Length: 168
Image 1 (tube, rainbow, N blue to C red):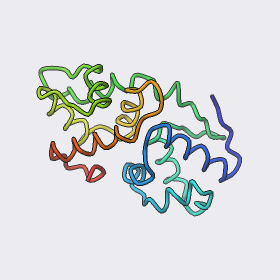
Image 2: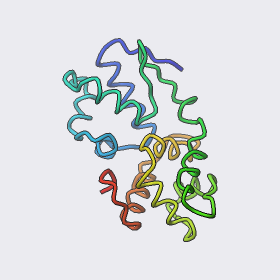
Image 3: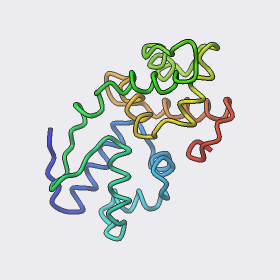
């Protein structure tokens, strides 16, 4: 599905819709992208004309959107492109036992990380690209991502003493 974005208002609608589909609050998305909540709010309100190209590209990449001559909203294809498998592999790089993608998906859905995979999840949260984590979280659900999923991740980051500032 391609959405043609012709002005700031339609970009605002695409970003807001995608953020909501991912179950992200404006505050959480701002933290993931490295912007302020006020900036995300301004963009979603159609007032973000001064945001700057590099920040828009970073925001779009983080939420699984791409930009060409027009904005391409390839969410189903891009977001469901083995995000869970890639995240599980990334989390398992330094460990003898691999984190199964199904275990990661279940943990995202129910908030419970099995004891034997706590270090894997900590590695994922500290080292994986944010866009990969967003993709894996989205792929863990059949429909829109509930906001509670992001609370699970923030709690894990705190419990596992992750150092990445985005989770603090």
